[in-house]
Length: 91
Image 1 (cartoon, rainbow, N blue to C red):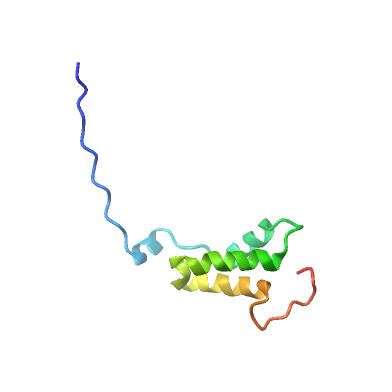
Image 2: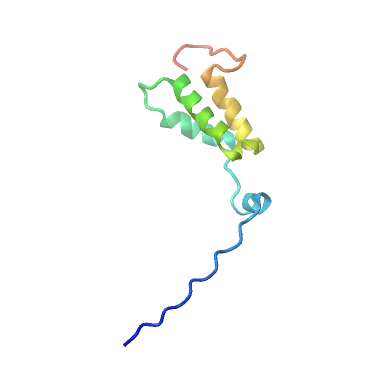
């Protein structure tokens, strides 16, 4: 008995950026920031962790998205890469 080999279905066409945003919008940058902040281990340096996340954002193509740029700004404030001064040293 020979099994019938069925052809693979064609891959769906690639979606453009607007369609992707409509289908799966990004969460609010402030929410992503808080989640990131809570995920940093207590003994890790927040500034270094923020700089690492900024590097990831800068390498991605999503950086053009306004919400991603807002997230990057929040991370830059923690990383010390802007004019905002931390009120206390453990923040």
